[in-house]
Image 1 (cartoon, rainbow, N blue to C red):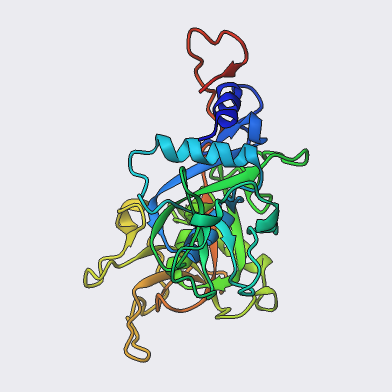
Image 2: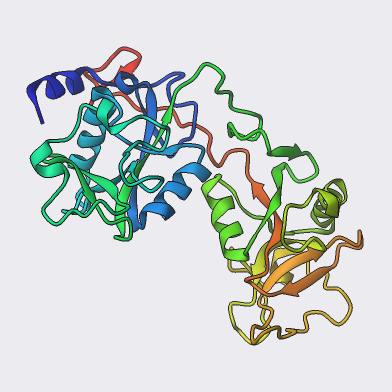
Length: 331
């Protein structure tokens, strides 16, 4: 890293009060005016971009020297970082002749990248996604490798954490359970719905009581079939499946439905009806208003409900080292 970067990082801090008011799994760096999160589980570029987006952030790019220095520092601190670098949001998947970050900053405007490393021998100009290596800078490569990555959220004045402990205003607190719920009208397969809820800081909703079944039924009634975008409209995906255990249905937290507190199946369900060779191994609730569960194909695209504990993303106060007696913690 260049000397100016080391000097900058010596003074770059994350704030104790007010700085970490985005998500507790992100770290705020004041010098870059934003939050960062290193994802150690490798993913392909499109998967990494999607995960950051679902978390309310973007796939990080070295859009300026401050962000670049923080990204390099994060990489250097990770023992599990790949020798192939980490994915950035810099790509040319729209048109081969223009590289830009996910948020639209042109590669030409970025401080990173040494020409001798940026486009390695054999570069053909095909769609590629750039990874960042601390010494070489930005390097073009395939988008199909599985690499770790960093998500970034820029701090803005309109960022407000709601009573649900998130900046996502789609979540609403229900006092009957003390949990928050978000109804997704855009239909997705069950596994992608599961991922979406997790990335948002929640989970695919689990019904633990008749009262909670009422909440899900009410959400379905508030979102009629005409409001659903694509896919199937007769119900909503929930957080239970049979894990291919011959009819033993469990929540995504490992409990049987009986242990979880509610197993209100519709008459003659589950029936594992086979369509195009695929059985029904994922759970949903019908929109009949009778709080009935139904089994569906996991590939079926349904609207879905995410559930969130208001405390799940609450910022946790950072602990300062003894030598940092002020309101900031240094590196």
